[in-house]
Image 1 (cartoon, rainbow, N blue to C red):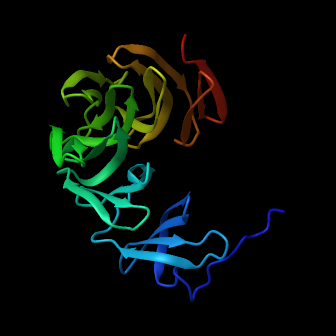
Image 2 (cartoon, rainbow, N blue to C red; image 1 turned 180 degrees about the vertical axis):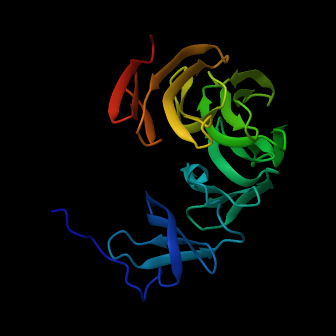
Length: 275
């Protein structure tokens, strides 16, 4: 028990692949997307590991970890680095639909009510591949750097940053692409710099963790950690901070059984997400 079912050797399908970008099991076997001289979609036999089908993709799959392909019913859905959304049939590897989202270098790709949400540059778009149309596009300022994102029900929450200015949390309605809120996160003290480290979607909101550094001495020195929780209307439900010194800027954040679990400053702290 626990042994390998099979191994794919260097002489097999993955011989010229630099990396395995995505892997999923389906009724026909195991689906794999590899990167190399070309990005390829492979179907491997579950028992033997042998390749039973192959398709060279027309353009490279988006590299961001939050813009990975996914299975939707009997179709493989992916977005490429140029923002083109494609659907490929699992049964025959035939192209079932393709449309340009207009968002290059995607950093979020997700299904939403039968459509496809793409976040990249210069903003976001909701694509109807079957109907071959874009339902809406929302643009951000060219100076706004997207540093985190979360989908909360009907709202896409994007954390942006403009140079050394304060961070901003922007809520976009997924039905029409209109902004429903814009919440600035200001520094608490002069010479403080807010560095967004982590973000996580909650059942009725989103949580974002910041490392706060201070540059008053001419050096960047970690001063504190900060956790901000907003609901889908942008209302701030929690603004918590913890002073620190001599700690690394590393943070992790998770939503577990109704709790927000934050790890920072060599400690793990739990917050009631509904409180």
